[in-house]
Image (cartoon, rainbow, N blue to C red; front, side):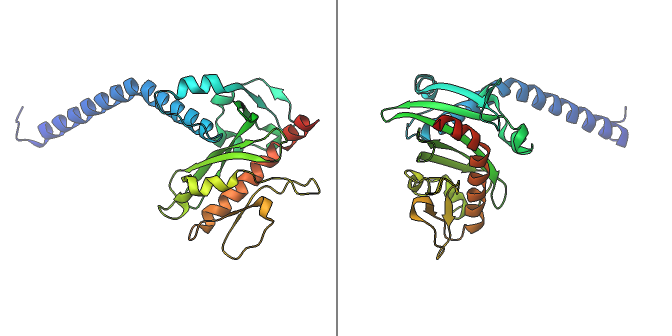
Length: 232
């Protein structure tokens, strides 16, 4: 075959593409278990962080096993159903009608009693946002919160993933004095709201903050029947 001809060039290029694609595919398959393990470890670290428990990639597994005393799935009626909390795909569940959703719950043992950790999922300015919120056994007072995002603007909306933004959530309440679920108000500059339900928003990150506010209200509403059962 003429090595200077177009046919040779085409065959050579095609062969190289196939070989490279095969190598990349095999590498991806081999790395997938390790990648999934890293994702699971980070998830456990975030769950623990919502109740103020610090962990590393090396010890998250053991701390999670010790401190998360129970996990389960409930439905919109607050009833426990079959399923594994850790395996629930929040994005998929949020796309369903509320009545059909599977809602994960994690119970954590702390020095201040059992805390209930609830995963959250919503939309920011540029993409999805999510987090874990820990609530006291009064099903009203927040014990802690941790949030993250896929692509919010650094220095603005991305600040939801920082401790200075997350820390003020502790001690806030989600029900008003009349027993109405009002959730948490992420207030922009000059916006008034009852102090017990209010955290300060991020300067320049109003849309992300309001997206987080909507996420919390929507997801707390999904869990409201569960809250009511626990209060009985």
